[in-house]
Length: 156
Length: 292
Image: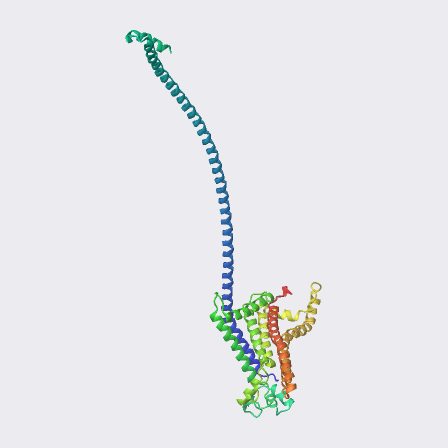
């Protein structure tokens, strides 16, 4: 355990190893580590940004959906009122049509009744003449009594 | 065990020394006395060799990691290396606030290198020396940090750096002023002649105090590491002496295992302390007077 030149040797070896590490090892390692640190930090930041973007987009989607919902409700409301209006209108039109048809039918009936009455009148005159001729059993001149018969038929 | 316990221990604590014999021939010392007679200009081939080899291991492993380093997904080796680099980088940046890009790589080198040198302590004490004996090498001390030359050699390098940066940052004048005018300062104001006289009187006292402070740093740095590792190694050697009988041998094995577990803590801690104290001393060297 003597102090010898080993001490100087070790001092020199120390200098050589420290210099090697200083010049060739440390800078390479530390720069690679810094670079990776930066890459990771950038990646995290990008992820965070994407997350923010996503939240933003989701908010916008929600907004759009709400708008669409309101619009749909409005349209349905509108359609409903329009339908009610249309039904109301159709009812009015139908009512008018009904009245018109009823009137027409009434007129037809009237006409038919008149025509029947007319026919009936003719028949009654004939029947009256037939009856009368049977009763009279004479040769009643038809032409002589026509005027009388027509007058009778018109009175019916 | 043919030799006595004393011889066994002494053998384990003797370095393989190469140097000049007193009779003028060069060669390896055959025993501790011969090594002592060689004086300063001899070299502990084993300590030096293991220290350089382990330093080379550090450079190669970290060099490979640096060569393969990418900013992409790191592999196993790169992960391990980067963990250590990151740890040292954090430690240094919390202690050392000045700008100097030598400090962090130096702390890394010291931490890993000293750790590897300490790690040799966990190799069972007889393995490598016995293997060396088979190859015809008589002495083989495998833990470089149990050699005061190695630890003080590193401390000397740190001391040189401390002096270098003190002068570089503060200038020779500033450095001398720090040595001569602290800790006892002449009060400002008053009679300039009296003040000048006071400064001259206080200067040698300050020089002694500051000089001791300055020198105590590298000496304590080197001796702390040496002392811890030497003591640890000694305990391993003493435990190794128990491998004689079965019963006491089993007890010894248990002891060795327990001490090794505990020693893992010590070797890591001592490597870390050496690195951190180096950074602290260099940070003090960078502190200018205003920071005091």
